[in-house]
View 1 (cartoon, rainbow, N blue to C red):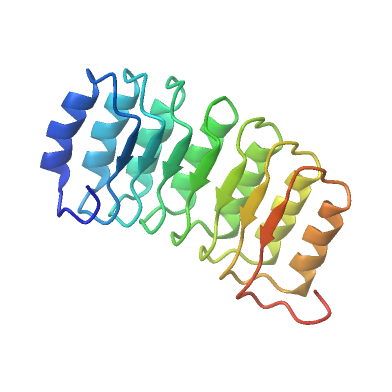
View 2: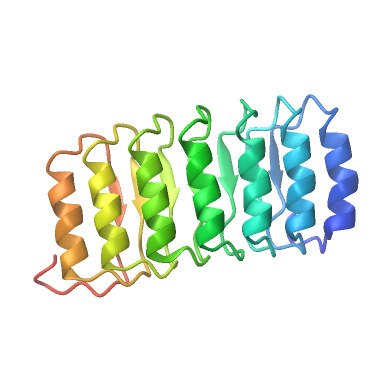
Length: 207
């Protein structure tokens, strides 16, 4: 149902069904017209649904309020493993809400926040969560305005995190200093297999 021109009213109908449905495991609703109200409807459904494992909401109009609603739902939901909020309007506060739930949620393995606006402060909140989270394996943070300080925070997290395997920080503003911090973290990290840093401000010195 991606690119289906669905709005919050349509989503309200869909999520009412989702609250009782016991078979659907994946919903792709990328590039529709879903805003915070639609995200809240999904959050209400996630609190009772026990089958959905993948929710793709990228390319919509969800901001911090919607991200917080979804984060609150993930405090009780025990089945969702993939949440895609890429290319929305999530900023620092939304990232903080999601970071808070990552400290307690034990099922989510993939979080996609690409092309939002979480910047260094949001990255730091997520990094703090990664220090205690034991389930997340994939984190997409590309094109979020993350620079040196955000990279350093994530590097510190990688020194203790034991589950993350993929971290995408491409199309950011990470310079040589940030790249060196990440490189130092990889000397002790034993789980990360993919670190994407293309389209940054890294020179030969940082590489």
